[in-house]
Length: 347
Image (cartoon, rainbow, N blue to C red):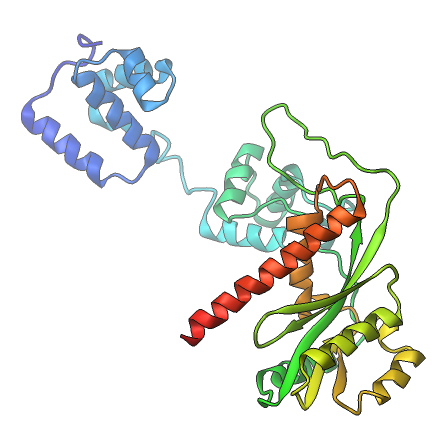
C-alpha cells in the first residue's frame, strides 16, 4: 500500500488536514482518514478495522487517490444535478406521511415505503428508490408507531372548546377554600396486559397468564394542586364505587367549602342513585362533566397509563391479592414523591 500512496510533501499534507477539519460530509471524512492512516504506515486491513469499514473500501479509496489525487476523495456524484431530497420534497413528504393513503386515492389504509414512493412520484414527478425513501423518512424524523384510537366527540368543535376552556379556567382560579380533582375509574385485570419490551436477539419472552381472569376496579381522584391521587377499590364498577370515592373526598377535604370534580360521562356518574346521594353532600361536591369522548383532557388518565406501564403490563403476579398489593405500593410511592416535590418547591 505504501508504494500505491507515496508520502506527500509537508505543505500538501497540512492543506489536506485543514480541508479535513473543515469538511462536514461523513463519507468524505472517512476517505480522508483512510489516506491519513495509510500515510502513517498502517496496512489496509488494519486501517479498515480501526475505522470500522470493509477492507475493500480502503483499497478502492487508495487506488482512486493514487490515480486522481485529493479530488477522488470527494463524492463523484455531486455534479449529477439537483439533489432529489430537496427541502421542498421533504416538506411535501412530511405532509403526506401525516395524512392517510386514502386521502390520495389509494385503497390501502396504511403507508408503506413503496406506496410513499408512488405517491411522491405522482405529486412531484421525482422517482426515488425505496432505500432512498427510508433515508428521506429518517430526515423528516418519521416513525412507525401505533395509532391512538378515539371516538369522535359529537359536540360542535366550538362548543367543545368552550367547555374545555371553562374547566381549565375553573381549575386555574380555585379559591384557597375550594378543591379541584380529576376523577376516573380503572380496571385491574389478573390476566396481564401484553406490551412492548426489550428482548435479546432471537429471544421472545414469555408472559405466563393465570388463565382464569379476575378483575378489580379503582376509582381515583387527582388533586390539581398537589398532584396526589386518592382512590377506593371494589369488585364491581358501579355507582357505589363512585359514591365511596366522593365520601372519601369529603372526609379528606373536610375544611374545603366546595370540592369540584371533573369527570367523564360514564353512566355511573349520572345515575339516579348518584343524583340522590349528591343532595346529601349539602352542595359541597360539584360535578363538572367533560365533553363526550375526551379522555385526553382528563389528567388522571395519565396516572392510569403510568400504572399499567409500571405494574400491570406483562406482570407475573399469580393472584389478585399480589397484584393489588403492587398497585397500592405504586400509588403510595407516587404520592410520596409528589409530596417531596411539593416540599422542595415550597422551600
